[in-house]
Structure formats: structure tokens, C-alpha cells
Image 1: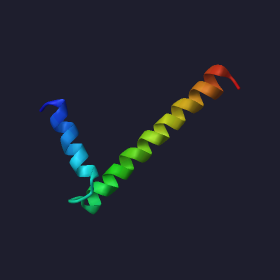
Image 2 (image 1 turned 90 degrees about the vertical axis):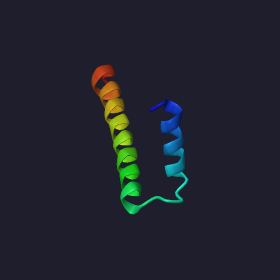
Image 3 (image 1 turned 30 degrees about the vertical axis):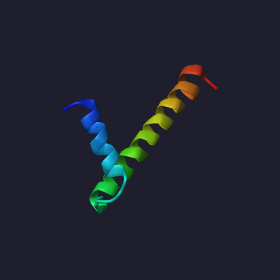
Image 4 (image 1 turned 45 degrees about the vertical axis):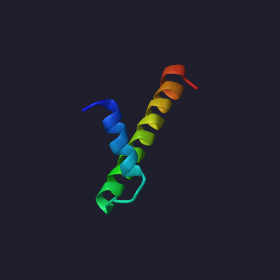
Length: 52
């Protein structure tokens, strides 16, 4: 599968025309996980490595 095919499928999914509750929950779960991971990495860099 080419990258543009994957991006087209993701774009079609995010438009929300045919999205199910399970898909919406999965999108929110992945988004919140990414935000939490970013926060954890930021915490480690700022407070542990730099030492503020």
C-alpha cells in the first residue's frame, strides 16, 4: 500500500461521514496517548535531564 493510499483512507475516515463509535474512540485514544507521551518526554527532558 502506497503512502498516498493510506493518507487518502485516513482523510476519508477523519471526514466523519462513515465513522463508527469504535473508530472515533480509537482516534481519541491514539490522540490522547500521543499527547501523554509528549508530556512524559517533555517532563523527562525538562525536570530530569536539564534539572529545573
